[in-house]
Image (tube, rainbow, N blue to C red):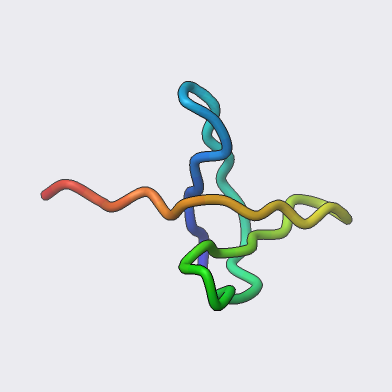
Length: 44
């Protein structure tokens, strides 16, 4: 599943969901790199 995270005030990254951390952050994979950040909620 593709998810979007926010890693700074203006930087967001989209990639494949890897896992959920205990502090509420999620991890995503982009190529061979794994990033952690706050999940971006979708607006309907």
